Amino acid sequence: GIHKLWGGRFRAGEEDLMEQFNNNFKDTHWLCDPDIEGSLAHVAMQVECGLLTEGEGAQLTEGLLGIQADVHSGALPLDDRYEDVHTFVEANLIDRLGEVGKKLHTARSRNDQVNTDMKLYVKRETAHVVELVEAFLQTLRKKADENPYIMPGYTHLQRAQVVTFKYHLMAYHGMLQRDRHRLQSALENMDLSPLGCGALAGTTHPIDRAFTAEKLGFAGVYDNFMDGVSDRDYQLEVLAAFSILMMHLSRLAEEMILWGTQEFGFVTLDDRYTTGSSIMPQKKNSDGAELIRGKTGRVYGDLLALLTVMKGLPLAYNKDMQEDKDLFHDGLETVLLSLTMMERMVATLTVHPEKMRRAVSKGFLNATEVADYLVAKGVPFRDAHGIVGQIVLYCEDRQTSIEELTLSELKQFCPAIEEDIYPYIDYENILHKGIKKEML
Ligand code: ARG
Image (cartoon, rainbow, N blue to C red; front, side, top):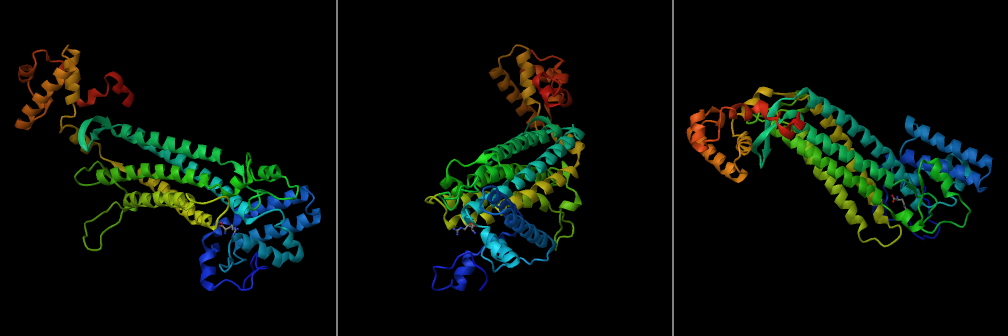
C-alpha cells in the first residue's frame, strides 16, 4: 500500500473501508501550503537547537520548497490515497531526499502539527474575510450616499415612519462593522502557536517553541501543551462570527427579495444576479439573494456541528477533531462566496425613489409626527396619541390621508391644531426636525 507514518506495531493493515473512513487528504488539499510552511519553521528551529545540522536543514528546506512548487505547478499529483496532508508531504520528502527526509518529524506530532496548519489557514483566511467585509462596507456607504431618498420604514413589516433608503442601508453598515470587529478580536484571541506541544506532553528535546511561533507570525505560544493540541476554540469563534455575519447578509438578502417584488417595487436586482424559469417566460427570480439566505443555514450548521463534535471530548487529541477541517472550510467558502455576491448585488442594485415616495404617502407614516405636533402645542402625549388615532380612523373611512384634511376638519379633533401643522407633518420635512436630522 501507500506510505503511512505508522505501522510498526501492527500485524494487519487497515481494512479498505477503515482506510476510506479515516483518510482525509482528499478534503484537505488546501492545507498543503500551511503544512509546508509549518514544516519549514520546524526545520529552521531544529537547526537552531542542534537537532539537525545546517546541511540537513538546507536539504530539508529545499525538499519542502520543491514539493510546494510542484504542488502549485501540478507536477506533483495530489494522490488521495495518502492518509492526510502530513503523510503526503512527509512521504514525498522521503521519496525525494531519502534518509534525511526521515528526520523532519523529530520533536513533533501530527497533533501539534495539524493544529498549527489549521491556525495558519484560519488566520490567513479570516484576514481575507475581513478585507471582503471592508470592501462591502465601502460599497454599502457608496450606495447609501447615492440614494438619500425617503422610503417607508417598517415595524412588523407594517409601514411605520419615514426613513431614507440611505439610512436603511447604513443600518447594515453598522452590523458589518461589528462583524469586522468580531473577526478581528477572534484573530487576536487565536494568536498562539501550537507547534512544539507535541502529541500532548511536549518533548524531551530542548526545542524552542518561541522560535517557531515567531517564524510563523504568532504572537506567542500556549502555556499548556494539552490545551495547545486540543484547542479548537479559534475555529468556533470564527464560525460564530461567520454565523452572525451571514445572519446579517441573510436579512439584507431577504429585504432585497422583498423590495424587488412587484408588490414593493423599490429596487431592481441586476440581471446578472437573477435567473429565469423553465416554464414561466416572464420570470426573473432573485436567486442570488435567495442563495445567500439559504446558505446562511449551512454556516450555522457548520458551527453547530463543530460545537457538537467538541462537547464531549476528553483531553487531549481525539480523532473526532479531524472533522473540524471540512466544517471550517465549508463555512469559510460559503462566507467568501456570499460576501462577494452580496457586495456585487448591492453595487449593481437599481433603486426606484418614486416607488418608495408613493409608498410613503399611504399608511399614515406621519401619524407619530402629528402626535409630536400636538405635544408641541401643549397636549400631553397620551392624549395626543388618542386624538391622532381618531384622526386616522376618520381618514381610513374616507380613504384619505392626514395631510389632505382641511384645517377645520382637523380642528374638530383638537382646537390647538393650526395651519403650521402642514409643514410639520410633511414627509420631506419630517427628517429635518429634532434628532431625525441624524438620519440625513
Ligand atoms: N489527520 C489528522 C487530523 O486532521 C491529523 C492528526 C492525526 N493525529 C493522530 N494522532 N492520528 O486531525
